[in-house]
Amino acid sequence: AGLHALAKAAGKLYFGTATDNPELTDQPYVAILNNTQMFGQITAANSMKWDATEPEQGVFTFTQGDQIAALATNDGRLLRGHNCVWHEQLPSWVTSGTFTAAEVTSIIETHCSTLVGHYKGKVYSWDVVNEPFNDDGTFGQDVFFNALGEDYIAIALRAAKAADPNAKVYINDFNIEGTGVKATAMKNLITSLKSQGVPIDGVGLQCHFIVGEVPTTLEENMREFAALGVEVAITELDVRMTLPETAALLEQQKADYQTVISACQAVPQCVGITVWDFTDKFSWVPGAFAGQGGACPWDENLVRKPAFDGIVAGF
Ligand code: XIL
Image 1 (cartoon, rainbow, N blue to C red):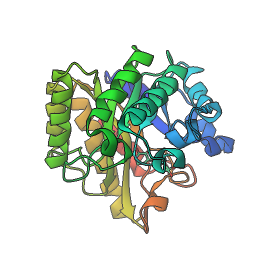
Image 2 (cartoon, rainbow, N blue to C red):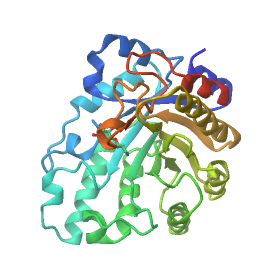
Image 3 (spheres, helix red, strand yellow):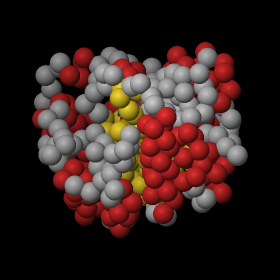
Image 4 (cartoon, rainbow, N blue to C red):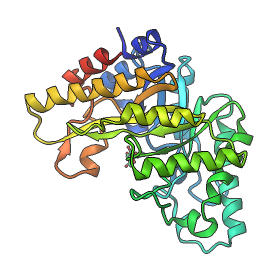
């Protein structure tokens, strides 16, 4: 059975994958991607980001994002929007301009409402704010925070919710998968937003893990988020290793994937799981972490690895 079919049978909303426009010319890849029993949810790995969608102020380009959206919606699959506000992959007009606080507010509102509005009715959930925290739990000192303090988060969430009231609005981050200072900072932020009446429907746990290092508190931590009244999603799962792959590493990776799926399975408010692409052929890992790779459940030749069986075993 396909992974999405297994997820549905286990009571989850979806099992999905990220994908990117250049990959869509690879026909063997697309044959797996388009198996709706395998992947019931799609995320654009790049083409809905700020640099791709508003490269010049007030000039919006949705062609690439629309291609990814159509992959999902044409087949009745769920779409996750990724993302509205993030300190990376920003166009230079955002990072190198000198703007007043009022101008930055307007820039965030225009970007979020135009982007989310464009996809209105097509998106299950939006990563409205991506990676707001440093690893020590302080807020990242980016162009948005420096102008507005943490208020930028509420401004973005309100604009996104107003633009598509049926889309769930999320904050997404990494190194918040286990309990600790960064997860606590996210919990405090969610509590604060809720107390102010700011819309916040979910928290995304990216889950870019290292073989053998899945946090032991993953399930407990998800329960703590859920207790705040938000849903949880595993939004960018991969489990990387220092290359070369060995049989032992692949077996540990299988166990790690199973652990992650089992944790989501154990927590009713964990709605679904997205892998950050399904094949090592197109993984972001080797480009981001020198000497590392092998992070996905399919190998570079689109052959299933032990990790695939680990996912199956987790449901
Ligand atoms: C990555 C993409 O996969 C790469 O293609 C791109 O070069 C950099 O960004 N956390 C996120 C994602 O929220 O947007 C990132 O995606 C991976 C880390």
